[in-house]
Image (cartoon, rainbow, N blue to C red; front, side, top):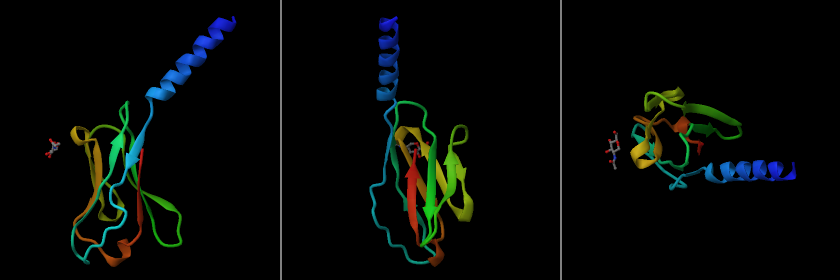
Length: 112
Ligand SMILES: *[C@@H]1O[C@H](CO)[C@@H](O)[C@H](O)[C@H]1NC(C)=O
């Protein structure tokens, strides 16, 4: 009985280990003239099919979901004119907007 328990624990740890996931946002600060396009880069690392999210945090506010990718169409449209394309070949999920406004000044978080 003790042996069975130990094996189950090891399987659990193994699954947790192989399921290690992370995202990287290489740019800490991006400055864009009003009206220009912007791209906020995000690279992910995941051993399983990823669910990816972009959140925005406007000054003195909480996190707000912009868009998410779970499966299906690799291009995702979000609120406020934002979009992101899931690129498995580049393991990336960059956030884009074609014309930015001053009110877009905020912190943007890629999540997995
Ligand atoms: C990855 O795929 C996208 C869309 O299919 C394509 O535009 C892009 O050039 C590809 N990147 C590489 C590095 O192959």
